[in-house]
Image (cartoon, rainbow, N blue to C red; front, side):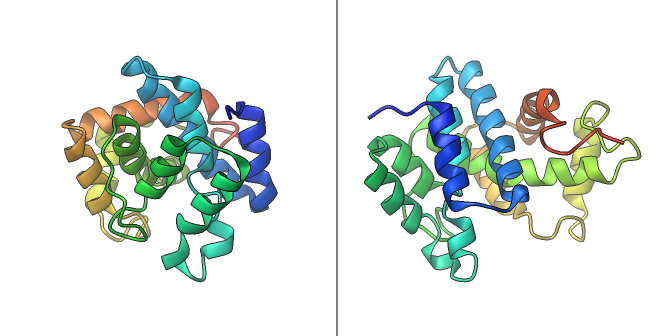
Length: 191
């Protein structure tokens, strides 16, 4: 069964009530759509994967080893395609899942998930609280500061970037480009 973005967003909201989790899903969706466009892949499908990748997070936060497993169950029950379910599982590879990312969609999700968090955190500490004036070099400076955004696993991001045979600068630049148009939805750039 093929689902629309609106249906996927409704499914996400069915299981997630915390707006910060919704904003994270919107950020990952935007990044996934951007990279799908760059690779001439299915933007709608990649966006839905981005929206749903953490659908079970609010229910597994206290038992992270269940993260992606519960999501796979729910998505299967709802009738999502196997490649969408597998991508959701693969984004937890080495952390909560043994499903290794193989497809371009899976590798991209693995790489952008954590990076969106670092970039948003970097924007929030700027006077403008905006992505519009945030540059790759500023994000890289925050990347090197291990005390900044401690929850962001830089090793996971680097592993994802390496899987994609891309430079970290290219990945950061792409995510910045993807997030700038939706910064207000993410709670950024608003005084």
